[in-house]
Image (cartoon, rainbow, N blue to C red; front, side):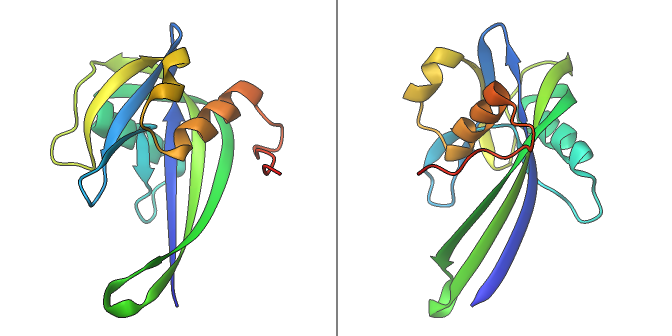
Length: 151
């Protein structure tokens, strides 16, 4: 079994009761809203990753103002030629403040739209689970940066 580790950093940016999201385009063409952010380059600090990724996906310069927590995700999925991958995603979640820039959509990236959404409308969006995890971390601010595992 092939082991894969992906470390990424994301921002929860809330302003005037709205959450900033980017629309992720999956490999199969499906589209779901996600937090701005993404994979860390080798040698890059996660703080710098979230700043770079948010700018790429939304056009905004963000300032990470708090480390909200870290989410660890594992799943298995099929790879080419019948092999199986053991995927481990480590997602570092910051609270971000808009420090400059203007809203725009990413060109030739993994997202195609960026938009503000009312917090009370988020549950009705077609979204990835990370959006809910990020909002839970933002709302509860667990001291250890870890959400309790659902029963």
